[in-house]
Length: 189
Image (cartoon, rainbow, N blue to C red; front, side, top):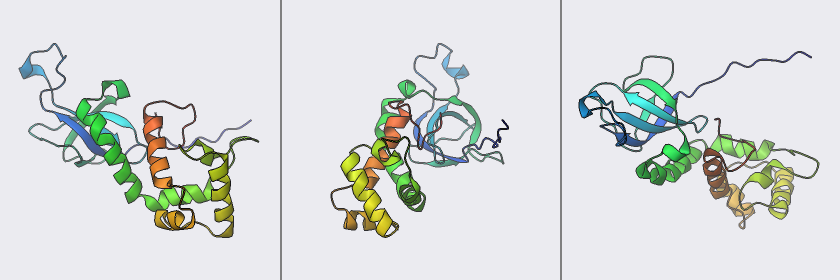
């Protein structure tokens, strides 16, 4: 059986969760040998990343940085993927706000996901994987979607006031980042 191979796409941009000017506190190297660290969240696939900024660059939470293949103006290199357990307290507290902003900025893409989501088995649907949306709400969403495709979060809220899809998407993404579910809808590890 022949498999199609898609080229692995990478994050192009990331949002700073925290900036550690002198690196990690538990790094045993002397202060003059430590490099600054940026904890960041990729905008495309919600990948947690550990970045090293260019010399003399200082960043703050919510700054957007380019990390693609082209010339980078603020980031020297991507050091590694980052485990959620290694996030600083600042990074943990800024992440929900950043995830919500990314969802808002990419609203059309997430609404399209809601319009296209399908079953994952004979008994379960992708919409049921969103926190707060069980079988009943999933059926309501599917019925409303069959009548007319969704156009925005506001329109969904107007048609189905009991369902907050933006909040459900945000919680789903945060849960996936923390590895709380075996299914991955939005986050790439």
